[in-house]
Length: 357
Image (cartoon, rainbow, N blue to C red; front, side):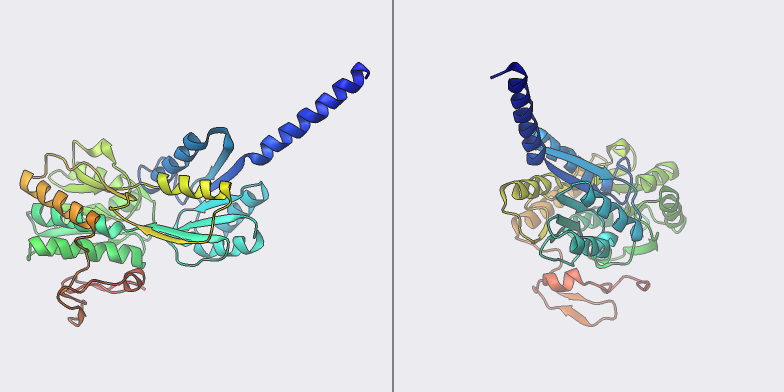
C-alpha cells in the first residue's frame, strides 16, 4: 500500500473518530432570567450548570444565556439553542413556561426542563423546590426577633409560588408572635436591584425591622444594612457578603444534584417527562447558617423546625388554618394537599391587603 493511501486511510479514520467523539458529547443549554452574578436565583442555577461540567467533564458541553426577558425573547433564545445542537435545555423561570412548551413542540428530539411551571409534554419535564418550607423557618425567626412587630415582605409576582411563601412565613411568625403584622410590597420583577431596594426602603419607612424577599438580588439586604438595626435573609443563595450585617440566615436552592441526574438520564436513555417538587428533606432546599445575631434559643427552635420538616414529621401548612376571609381552610391536624398549594391564590387569615391580579 502506498504511503499516500495509508495517510488518506488514517486521516479518514481520525475523522470518523473525531466525529463520533463530537456526537457523544451532550450539549446542554440553560436559559436564565437574570445575570449569573445576581447573587441569588440565577447564581445558584449557574452553580448547578458548573456542577454538571465538573461531574461529566468532556462528555458534556454547557451553554447559557443570561438576562433573558420572559416572553418572545425567551422563545427565540431556546430556538437558537436547539438549532445549535443542544439536546437538553433547562429554562429556569416561571415566565418561560409557554415559550418552553412552544419551542419543545418544534423540536421533539430535544428534552426540555422547566423550573417552577406546571405545563408538561412528552419532551418537557417540570421541576421546582418547596421554598415554602424554608419560609416557615424564616417566619419563625422573624416573629421572634421583630421588635416593631412589623415584618416587610418583597414579592416578585403574585403567582402561587410567591403567595405560598408569604403565607408560610406569616403562619410561623404568628405562631410565635400573635402581634406580628406583615406588610407586602410587590416589585413586579424577579431581578431589578433599584426596584428591590426601593421596596425595602418603603417597608422600613413603614416600620418594618425585618425584611423578607422573593426577589433575586442582594439589594434589599443592602438597603437593610444602610438603614441599620434591620435584619434580613438570603434569598435562593447564602448571600454571605451580608453575613456580618443584616443577613441572619438564608434559603439556599441546591439545583446541582437534580441537574446532574437529569443530564445522566439523557446520556443513558432513561429520561422521561416527570414533575419534581422537592424540599428540605431531599436537599433541594437548604437553610443557610443561622448567625449569632439570632438568640441561641431561637436558633435551636428554628433548627428543630427544620429537622421536623426534613423528616416529614411536620408540614408547614397544617390546620387549624383559615383563609383571609375567615372561612375554614384546614381543620385541626389536616395537612394541605399539593394541588391546593400549587394553585394557591389566597392569603391566610391575619394577612391584610389583597392579592393583585
